[in-house]
Image (cartoon, rainbow, N blue to C red):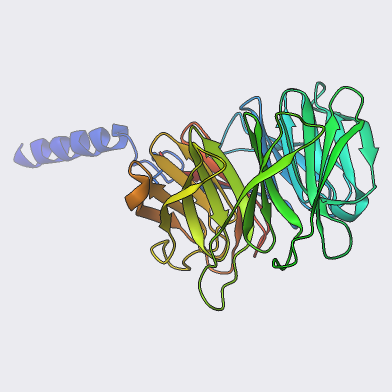
Length: 342
């Protein structure tokens, strides 16, 4: 009788164990902060824009443009590949995609049909590496094929040339423009030599240089002004040689450096290419340093929080949607990476 009772209990216990839920596997567990949750190949990836909070548009130089559906962040799906010169930088304005195509000029596409964007304009009259817009104009920055930098201001309506800015300052090396940003009546242009030039464009037919800012960086790590983002009165500068800089531009004629974070930026220090600031947090595409996350609640004393840094990778551009950062990598396994950041 005792043996029967023992066997019965064992049978009950074994039966109950079979009904217990299995432990979660990796796919079932919540994503951890800093975890790379997805990757899609895009060779020579150099810039990134988000369209309608649903599509990641990637520029990858001579490979053109790739559009990925990111409605499921962990499962980006390719929507379309198409040619766009030597796509160095892109900018989305409404349903239009503006592409700086370097030695092949620039291109404008209509994104209304996202699965089949339509080219509506192109021109190859100089070498643009940077592009941005405001309500009425688009701005192209690059070089003239020689020593000087060039910015063209063009009318959105008919693409006519409104004005040309030439940067021929003899005291500056690498005068070509690599980054552009517009805020109010002012145009900000960053050069390959690390200078920030600020122009008054209240009369776009006659832009006027009002100030120049320069940080020389550290010896052996020359400055290179690759990214400009303006939030309120602060211009956040991604300067490859000098670091991540907070510049007070409340008076554009007299900008004031309020803070800089460089040597503190994680493993590979300051190799800043691009950044986006949301609230008190900056997400920096820090080149060899990967993705650096920084507290900017006090720009005079910015604090490094954490990084996502893969060996032999170089992050060139970043955008943040929801809880995820989208970065493009021009190093090993080039392409689009999705990283949990919140």
